Length: 168
Image 1: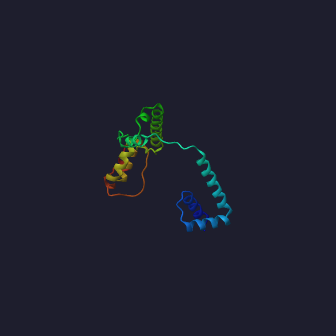
Image 2 (image 1 turned 45 degrees about the horizontal axis):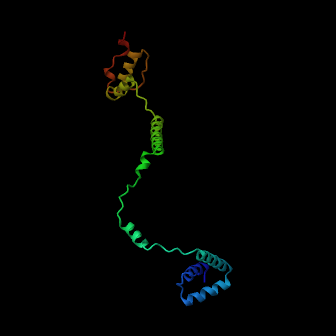
Image 3 (image 1 turned 30 degrees about the horizontal axis):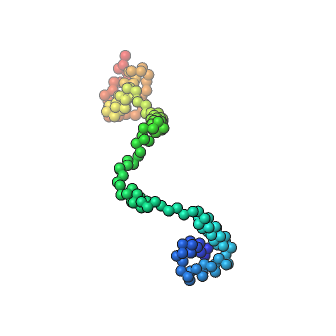
């Protein structure tokens, strides 16, 4: 028999609920197992201490009082006691948590990469490249900035550009 099963049988024996056959098996195990004998002695000492206390007899109307308390309905209780919500500690803790959430969101927003807005001339530049063609954009850049940025190559709109010799 395993010690675990023997200890379960000890509890049944102390309650007077152990069959005679199981009692013989338990006693045989106790003769062979030092650990279970020690556990058995501890159970016996506890049983002796509990029996040494004086018996207390309840009052004659004890049963009636207990049953009447069990039958009276209780008021439904809220899942969170209301005194928690009004306590200063709860208010402080909830304020601290709220503040931490606001700080975390602020840091998150500040850490997001900022996309630079293109300058107005660059916005037009993008539009001009698509609609007018490369040469027209380069000609406008030359007229506005005064520095040549001509690049080689031609496009269908090349014939529309003024020639270099026609400029003042």
